[in-house]
Length: 281
Image (cartoon, rainbow, N blue to C red; front, side, top):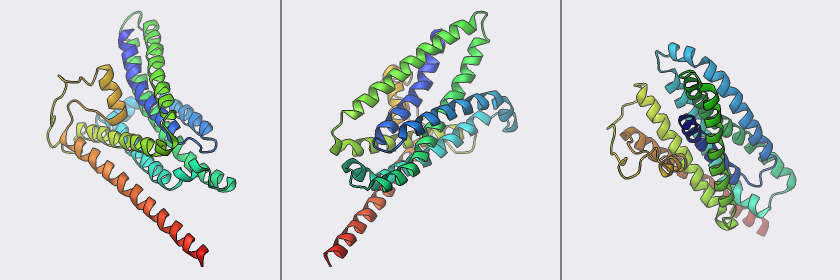
């Protein structure tokens, strides 16, 4: 029961952190609740299908099916999170100030809604598929495995969800003038964390060099399996024993998103100045 609770807590915590940060970062976007719910449901359905076919996928990819699948999902999620942050760097402050017209807000919010849906669906899909596989192996490994696995799984899910709710509530207490900057940084760190995890899976599949594995080991100082280690892993991608390629991937994604946000923000400011000059004439 404890093993099931720990597995589900670990997997649900990562999904809960992504969902809570996305929920906070997209505050004010029309119909975001429906997009989020649809993403969760789609992710759960997809996780069930993927878990059922994981054996065949693994055989087709010479035993590396799960690693390749996880890497593909993570890379796609990184792209979605990058797009979200760049989009919000243009429209976030306008939404906060309610300076946009209602029609334009709904139109642009719908466009952003598809990104919300995809990010959450991919997060739930990846974590859900892993959870189903782990719980299935636990349930079939002992005579009374099913009952204890279900009980432990529900306990772990409740604990992971609680942490996500607490994070969301804490983010909503941030003053609005700092809100989009802080949530933007959190989304950027999430994307970099996912890029690092994708690199790890590709290293395991022998598709990327490791460039040192591990590059360092902080397990004695902060174990990745501890409560704080799990939380930091979900929030900022903490790895006690990272490979060099993971660090490179992490930093490259951070720099790429920051550059994209800077470019988009600069373009928006230039357009605003041009409109001001045109109005003055």
